[in-house]
Amino acid sequence: MSARRHLWSDQTSLIHIETAAVQIRMCCECVAYMCKIIADLGQSISLSASTKKETVPGRIFKSLDRTGALNFPRQATIEKVEDRGENSVWKMEIQAGSIEEIDRTNKLWSKTGDILHEFPPERAWPLSGDAAKIDLFKILIFWRVEHQWLWNRFWTHAAKIDDNIFAIYLDSVSDVTPPKLISSVGHTEKLGNIDFDPYALIDFDAPVNWSDFEDTKS
Image (cartoon, rainbow, N blue to C red; front, side, top):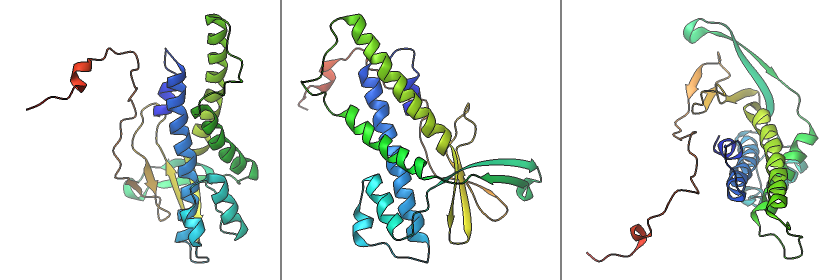
């Protein structure tokens, strides 16, 4: 949500896009770490020490795939078809996964590294302010598209641990709430113990009172 607010803000800058890229990068890492957790919770295989220490999403995916332990979260839809309180009836549809989704998540993580590094001196710089705005707009649109894919793909997802299925959805896209966990038994809602501010937006234009940062002696 923080990345979305920075990418769809009324005003933008390269710093806004870089801030969003950091959030997107961490989302890709969370997906990879989730795959490790799913594999580790399963009873069919024990993760190697090197896999447990790995932090690069692509390497994690390959390591788990080699041992048959890669269980990539699948896109899912959850709908309450009959409201019975705690015994409500839910309908869950889970889509088949694809190697393309795994590759795109890995490539998206790599692309965030590109924009977070300083541009090389060999890169041609815009010759005017208008040209710079056009370049910035192209970069903005690219990251909006990538973020929208990540948003749509993982807003509601499901995974399987042995014979159990669990799903995670982030509730309404218009009224963001903390993530909720859906148990496989009766699809009972359980609110995750997570506290965050989905409406936070960094203000890069606000005036700074530098005296607040001066060392003072008491």
